[in-house]
View (cartoon, rainbow over the protein chains, first blue to last red):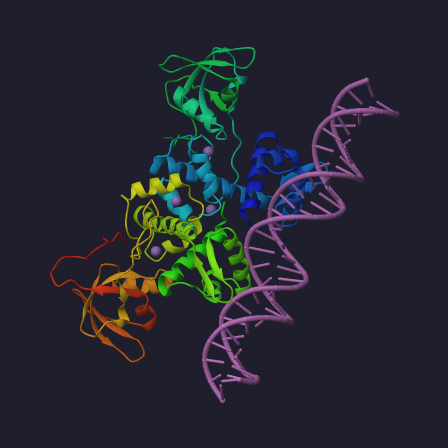
Length: 234
Length: 234
DNA sequence: TAATATTTTTAGAGTGGTCTAAACCATCTA
DNA sequence: TAGATGGTTTAGACCACTCTAAAAATATTA
Ligand SMILES: [Mn+2]
Ligand SMILES: [Mn+2]
Ligand SMILES: [Mn+2]
Ligand SMILES: [Mn+2]
């Protein structure tokens, strides 16, 4: 049996790996899980003994196949819970993350199945993040890129929004920017402030930190809606 | 902040107190929480330091007002969850207890409110146990008595069923005996086997352990349904 | 390359929760 | 009323997780 603490470490390593690729540094993990680097080193040792991470001293850590499966399991719980809270318990977009963080370690497989069934097996969570399938097969690469990496004038569709900061999410909810929203980039100011135009609305100026939370894909030429991955959002 | 372990001890003490009155013995707590008596002694010390239990060495323990409030909080979570699982996630009567046990320590007050709202503020759980109100005021005494304490020939209505044993619950579900069911006691055999007749069905013989799990009230003379406390059952 | 700065690990300690074994206390029985 | 009995507490240990401070390794910069 794995403790919820261990599950959190594995989840953190998975998510860091997804961004920057392996190996993942001790300090990056420490920042993510909110512990000291010394604590992380010691936990990585026990995780290594259990065959969940591979590790090279002073270099960094990487999930084993087994470790990745555990991480995917936790992520599936987290994201199904986020969907369920938004869809069936009337939570706002910005509220689901913390509740899911607390619950993800404590639901049974039965609960997972029933929640997935109640939601009709969703494939993305309210923030646009993909939900691992029940068999926990690896998630495919994400083709979305940061909003700020696109040119002024281009039309993009919002793919994912980082669920880490509640205030950013509330800001975006007010601005009408959620996964699936089509944006035209009007301006990118020197220090990161991004101005966008939503489909049939006025312009919005997004502070750097908020803009950084948004991942997008190029908008399809034709009039059709969002591409792969439907949105299960509130 | 209280750990989930502490919450479990307080819940156990509360439930033991409700049956036999204070004080509660170390060994009774140990049996309930599944730890050794030595472990319980040491936990009772820390609970006492925190002002949650009062204790007399070698005599037993008793909840303080504050400890009782915590216990009621946990019980409210547990029983609301049981209702929700049965009502909205299609769990069977016999399945809800374990899931609720795992979740009860990890839901937020926000979650509690939303679940209560989704259920329309239920007052009893699927086993007939009362749900503490949101303000956590003390539960009133239970007027139900064990089925086996009643005379042969009397008509009674099932008030509560112990939710501890899954198999017993499945047995009773098959037999059509749930909170609110009206029974006539047909026979009580020397070694505890109880035979009952359900309203419009055949007779059922219940093994001693199953019969012991049932609490009942005398059936009202008139034709009306169950008395105080409606049933929120699946 | 040598000195310096940063990151990582080690050393050592502390907390919370648990156990076993031994001592202790209260009560029941002879 | 004096054991014997059985429940309770103490003593001592252990494990999981965490921290701070110091040492070691790596990376950066001059
Ligand atoms: Mn699962
Ligand atoms: Mn999310
Ligand atoms: Mn509560
Ligand atoms: Mn119950």
